[in-house]
Each structure stands twice: as C-alpha cells, then as structure tokens.
Length: 106
Image (tube, rainbow, N blue to C red; front, side):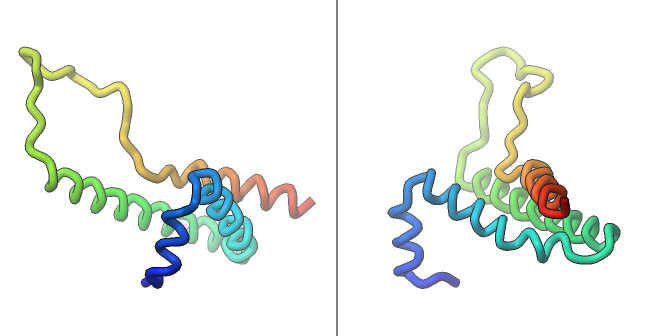
C-alpha cells in the first residue's frame, strides 16, 4: 500500500511524467525479467500476461457493476464491435523489453 503522500504526488504528475516513470521502472526491471534461460523468460512473460488479463477482467467487472445495463437505441445491436477494450496491452511492453534486451546484448 502506498502512503497518502506518494499517492498525492502521483496525482499531481502530468500524464507525460507518469509515462516517463513507467518507462524508467520498465527499464530498471528489464535485466531481471530477461535473466535465465529462454524457457524461464517465456514463463515470466506468460505469468505477467495472465496477471494483467486477470487484473483487467476484475477492473471491467467492477466498472460493469457500477453502470446500468446498456440499451441499444436502434432495433438491433451490431453483430460485432470494431474496437476491443483493453486496459493494458502486455504485448506492447513485451516487445519493447525484448528490443531492449536485443540491443543491450549486442
């Protein structure tokens, strides 16, 4: 749990500052994520993906509980939504970390 002072500091940050902090923390974690055999690294990223998916599912369920059921304003809903809602895309971060590992290994 973060202290109230730390939470207030995060709230005062601009989106750019928060993004820079996230990238810095990712850069610091990269050596630890990429340590081990390729199979161990693969399992670490799979675990991260599962944890992220589970967290996103719980967040979306919480949002769904706070809103009334959606009603279409037309005769029938569309067959398929063109966009998918995802709070965290682990594949983008995984690709960035793998690029960092490749460049640092050279």
